[in-house]
Image (cartoon, rainbow, N blue to C red; front, side, top):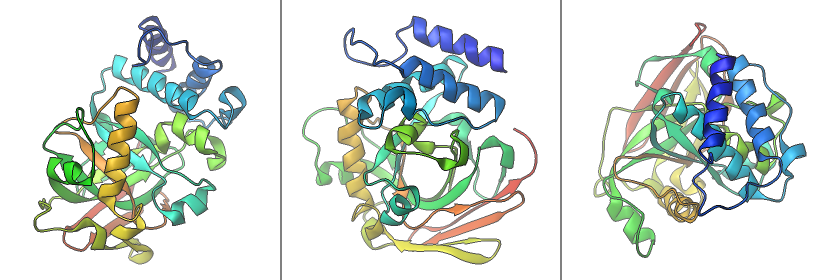
Length: 288
């Protein structure tokens, strides 16, 4: 597996690796940071933070690392199915010591069925949070982007669990570390109930999440940047600026509605979001 990852790294580098405009020079430290994160994913051994390589003040370099890591995974056969927004809840920002949102890429091999089992070892240092997920019916690529445009582009919403994971040991992260590490994305689970925005208002939705029958997180849509749709607007603008606009059919995990909770092997998680129903998953002790 490690050799496969390294081959993918070399292929990604040969292709220019990233979807950067023109022939923009890759910032110093990007290739080494990507190598470090890919090695951690391949060996399932968390690594040291990458801020020693890319600094803490250049999010452009951090997103360049993220794109390079994603390119390696695509080279191995994964497919992009959407994006995730991270650090939208003040509670989660406080937990991780950061003060602004970020985003990462969702790949097809990260998705699991509602009520199914997510192998515990598939995500390093897993933590779970409950979110509203949106499935887009239209691209958000051209022309003005505002809240009305985002609302109109949404085909439906579902309740979702995001299983965050960090390739960085002890979750010792700054903003640049988590951005580089694909916004600490690990896995996701989408609920079965689908609702259009004519029947569901994200901002006022009430969330409760339990682990093994004990409530561990509560919140509302307003706890996600004031409105989950505002988070999607932020993502649409940010992703387009980086040359990777949101597309019809993509899933968008809009961000946590409350604090994230650590997971142990065998944990059973259920989240209920008013207007969207429930979503659940178990975390088995098996391997990927």
